[in-house]
Image 1 (cartoon, rainbow, N blue to C red):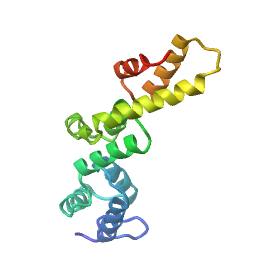
Image 2 (image 1 turned 45 degrees about the horizontal axis):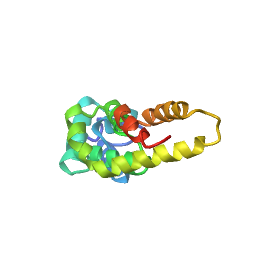
Image 3 (image 1 turned 180 degrees about the vertical axis):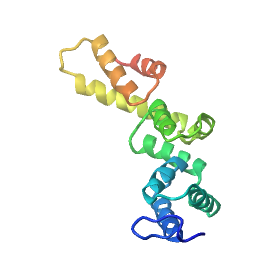
Image 4 (image 1 turned 90 degrees about the vertical axis):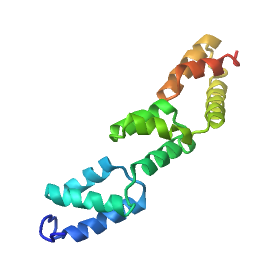
Length: 162
């Protein structure tokens, strides 16, 4: 690599590559995040391309691995629904095809159980609120849709509550 192509605080391209490797090692990253991070180094396009290629070749950067990890993390740690996860991945420029192919990281049984648990918790929190059952259901549906869950599944879960 040409050592004088990209400079920020006197860094060579090799040093920037090393920084980007560390950035990708710390946590799985997508191409978009790496491209955004590289902007702070004022690199020439060919140097950026070379760094991206090296990161991909050396397995520091893998879009499918990132997508699968993101989906698992947001669902199993934050209890996000599929819609919210998909929206955030789209913002990170992940293709719809890749998103669809990786959604199997969320097991159907786990998804249903999490949705049921969230619904139940919200229902319990509204006991004594003075709201009618249908008002509680509307409030809960809005909350769960904001968290990314599908309306039809929310309605299915709500049929168990009165």
